[in-house]
Length: 203
Image 1 (cartoon, rainbow, N blue to C red):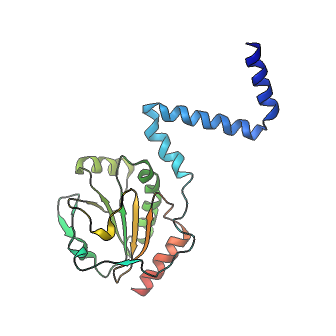
Image 2 (tube, rainbow, N blue to C red):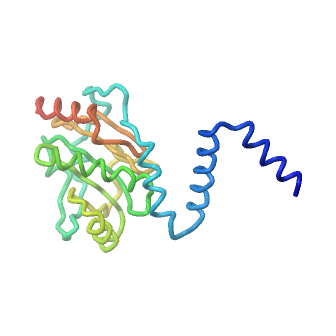
């Protein structure tokens, strides 16, 4: 017991106040992540604090181009109506692959919602998930998200395939993919807004 007291005393002597606070918060977070009931609530909030804009230098030079075959890709709206990627030709597109069970996806959703509220009438947003409609509808309603949701029934064209979610693409009106980002990001940033403004003006 005396050895333990000595260790605690030395810890507080050596550590600065800020370090002690950070250590305490770290262990609290670890405990909260272990508790099943709090993990789903705490993890997205924690991840949201470390989100960053997806690129330092945003360019309008296409990385790849969508082909005519790619435009034949079918998607279902939440009401069951089928659409094709080609229905959004000659539009600036914001395409995001996500899932309700994915913490990084949930963390970036509020930023995407804000971006949609600002650009939803100028840019076509396609929030694509392979989950069942019931789960998606419940999640969207609970969080009051209004961006358009599309259900993936068939494998995505090769140009959109990724081994991780979330993955986001921004496409110009000519079908050129100008941004590809894997992982969660702060999408309602000045750089992304500038990119969208440029693509809209060039449309």
